[in-house]
Image (cartoon, rainbow, N blue to C red; front, side, top):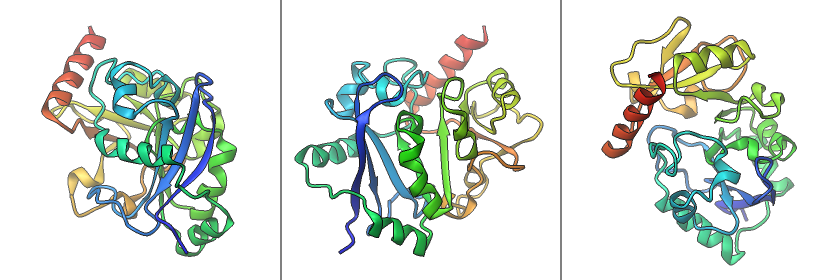
Length: 243
């Protein structure tokens, strides 16, 4: 019987060798995320720390790497960690079944799109772990802040997550398409389009799939969103790095 959630892999982070795990959810009960729509969600977790505590105490290096938006850095990451605590607690009980060939066949049959890294940087997990899932679905979105140092094979599947025009240009020179978080009043750059959901909230990632790595598609920008204090922190961060 198909379950809603599965553990895919556990092992050493490719970022810092700490113990991490990869979990997929949404096979039976779709996410309530109105922006993404029905995407299989993927969660990269530190094995030894509750997500909120890991973020608060800077113990999330193994899954977030050098992301400047982390709570212990600029404090502007939009991810709500409280629901992820619940995923972590269930993981620690050992009750998540292991993802197997039957579930891969479900992805092949129904072509459920996959959100590569709903929380955590996908490149912390070996690409060989991800590829059977990605190739079974053939539909995906994903981002990485590790684009400077990660395996370049990820360019096929992920956008380089950037916070400035200079970063975007550097990533593009290295062969990445970019996803740039911008201030609400910031202009778009040449070859860049606004997130389609931001333009029209009836459009969901499930059908858009613009953020799917290397292609001739345009680069994407999206105004910062989330809680007001996180938006404020992001604006302070972007101002500080532009000085």
